[in-house]
Length: 149
Image (cartoon, rainbow, N blue to C red; front, top):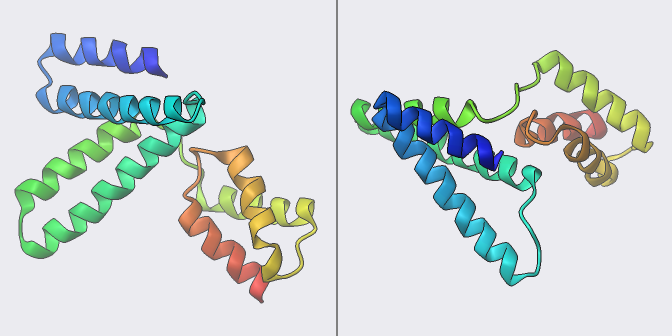
């Protein structure tokens, strides 16, 4: 993934895509921060960690869009939406709602979960199999509804 960031940055710079260049630089800066943090703990940053970072960046920008829209700052909201689109271009294709439902049902069956107490097992299985392809905030709510019912 790191090589892809570098290549995309070069391409965006050659094409003069200012917003894309800024966003990719922001991603690489966040990645460097993660590298420094991981090095202090004697670890390395995996592709799954990078996916998590990108998802966190998207979520942060989505929250900002809501705030800017409420405040009537369409210029800033538009900028955040553009950044979201750029960041999402590095993420794997997100699963459809039907696929998420099927994956959750399979994870519940596989883990043998029967109550809300087993929710951690189910979400853990999902994170292991579908990192970067599923919104785990929404998935957790679905798991909770299925196990709580």
